[in-house]
Image (cartoon, rainbow, N blue to C red; front, side):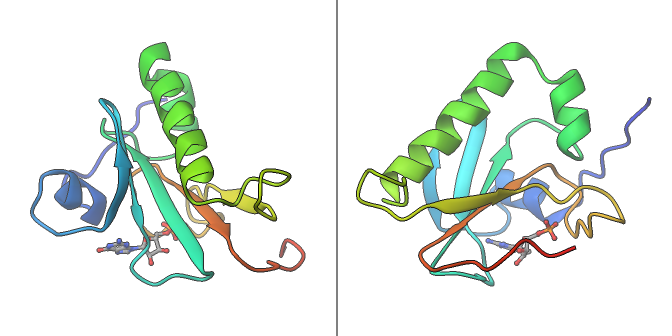
Length: 124
Ligand code: 5GP
């Protein structure tokens, strides 16, 4: 499948430094920052720096180096924010909305890391 990436999306603009963000952590291929409209006390977005539109695009076409870097950075964010279950935290949720049915708003691949309260059952 041919993926079309829109370089005008808001996360592309954040990556280019055109829009400010509250960075939690960054690495060579990955940026983590606080969501502008948090749904929980901890609500961090983790994005690859490369132009990937969603989970399947990233999973199928990113390099192994980018994929490892992304997951390692997400793990470091979770450790940094003290939400690791059994490590002083009480747990968290990871979400990757993809496409129209996933209700993805920003067409640059990202995961949400949510925590800091009981999140309730997963919705439909
Ligand atoms: P999606 O629905 O695409 O999975 O989630 C997009 C997320 O990006 C939303 O939770 C929204 O609050 C967040 N967001 C949208 N624009 C901005 C922005 O300019 N800065 C930050 N930090 N987050 C944003």
